[in-house]
Image 1 (tube, rainbow over the protein chains, first blue to last red):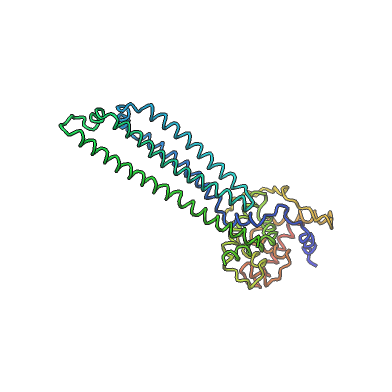
Image 2 (tube, chains in turn brown, purple):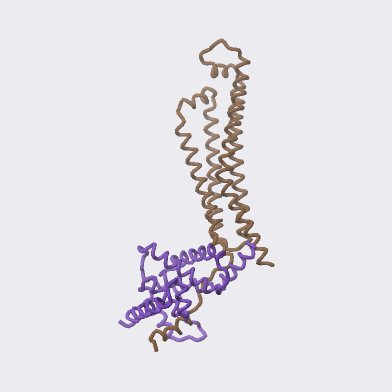
Length: 216
Length: 164
């Protein structure tokens, strides 16, 4: 008889793996989606923070002169500081989401986490859009509240122009500028987070199907 | 349809997962690598599941996909650390028929098998799992004759490692 035959019995008597995976863990592994999507939400959030603060550094000093002329420098500084604090809180939330979802091994909890993530991402997007809108509105109100200063700003050469005309032109250009930027920003978020959230939603649907078929 | 397929896959895999665990034990030497390979096998199984027509048993099909995954992954990373860190594994024999010699045999067997190359590992594994040559050749995608020749060589190698 083959010597190795002796080992066959030992082989077949070897214990089953002690740390077995449940169906939901297997599901998560085979799809390996949710946690990587959530990881990307966190990473993109960080990249976005770096991108925006990088752009702020790139803006030439002269641009801030407008704010100086409007006596808005300290307001802008406080506004930005608050903004960054909120963004960091959001990033912390995203990171927490990621950590939580990577250890979940139960369908219900996973579904709940997905819902929570969707909520936090949409809050984040609305916050950013709202902040942009609010900031622009405040700057505009300050700008238009003092027509003399506005005239100086818009007409530094002191050309002989009609004040009302300048105000109308400024208002229209501000509205156009604000709309364009809001739409662009919205598209940006729609593109970046929309795709991730769509995948996450698909995942959520699969999970709820799975849950109902397990219970059935 | 998709839903039924999915839950069928999950329940089949859940009950047969020990096959994958044994393959992971064979191709990796620590818990982390074990779980990585297990996940890779899971992904491959799920990816290939739509092609599984059910003309063979789920477990038979699983042997094929899991072994091929282990072999190809093993090939990709030749720099994989080959520490003999097998202490993490629980090689103890089932308590019901506890036998000291079997435990020692099993330990020696794994240690020796870790020294074999990827294909020889697969051959010996299928031999120990008591698979007929027909199934072995299908699983590894070689002819039955070739399987026999290779198996004899692999067995010789293993015997030499076990009893130098």
